[in-house]
Image (cartoon, rainbow, N blue to C red; front, side, top):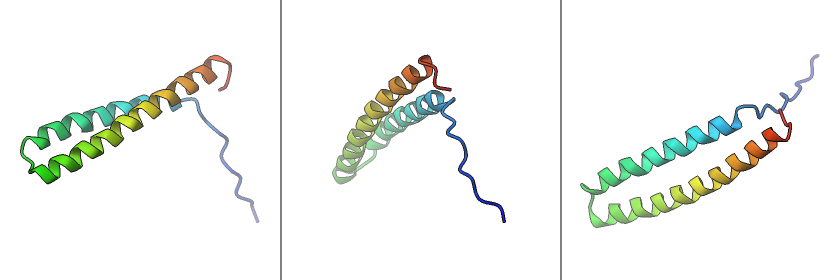
Length: 77
């Protein structure tokens, strides 16, 4: 019987993955602005709320990018 071993922690591409996530979120915000032009007031309000959460997520991801980049510079593979 073999034991399931956890995969080793591979953070080598975390910065790149996070940068892609930030870019995708920015694109979602831009697309939502276009959708707002054709939305009623209730939908516009929901979109604005969602975009606020997206902006908060972007800020958090950017902090994480800085942490990961710093760790990478300090020798973490």
